[in-house]
Image (cartoon, rainbow, N blue to C red; front, side, top):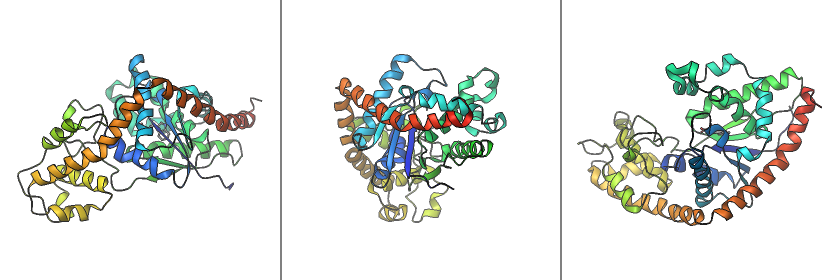
Length: 334
Ligand code: TRP
């Protein structure tokens, strides 16, 4: 097996303002990974249009995601941040992968089944081949490591299957089998209204999520109104299993303070929710406040953001270009 250079790739869809789940669950990790890896982070607008998008909103959401990456601490000078649609190699490799990947594999994808629901005959073809494009994103850079949340693990396995099948079909050792990098203790930030559902930009209730652009007052009021119960906070972690809302608040606080759930819980065992909620609101204001200010500052200068994207795509093409040339030779296009 060829040894591949260690390289991280990840993508975030520009489908709305990012929330605390995106931040604690993904972007904070993106920042950590820069210490150890060469990192490529992509705003995946081509994935976004697999379901209907408003073009103007798509454009502004793209800049917002970019601003959020930078505000959170992604170093756009050292690393690469760019917009998927401006690097044609993604689509070029995606087409090759459409011909490597199998319909049976795509039909088994839980996310596709969930999103298509009963409407299977009427969703876009793009929604079905979404995982092939994701494989192309990663493998156009021969990336070896992909930070993903739980919900994307199956897609990453598919990327490995595609890489493996390509290598077998063409009798080459060309693509690495990318490995997941599983996040720390805040993998899953849940809805503030229902501790069994993930915090999500598509939830009908605004109170269910904290946006990175929320004001300090919004943060306090959302945490105050977060669902809890009338008991006192339990003493040990096992008792949290059937108190998903309590677990979520403790989990968020632990992630913000970079400490274990056990340690956080010890400070609140036997106390009322109001204390936990007050402390959590204060901590979140300290964590989210500076990020919000930076995002809003960056969004004030759109020309600068567009320039950053431009430089990012040029750097990305420099890596992906020669790789796609090789792929074209392998499949017999050249
Ligand atoms: N599918 C991912 C999501 O919705 C986004 C994504 C697209 C991605 N391409 C990727 C993530 C490549 C990791 C690597 O979260």
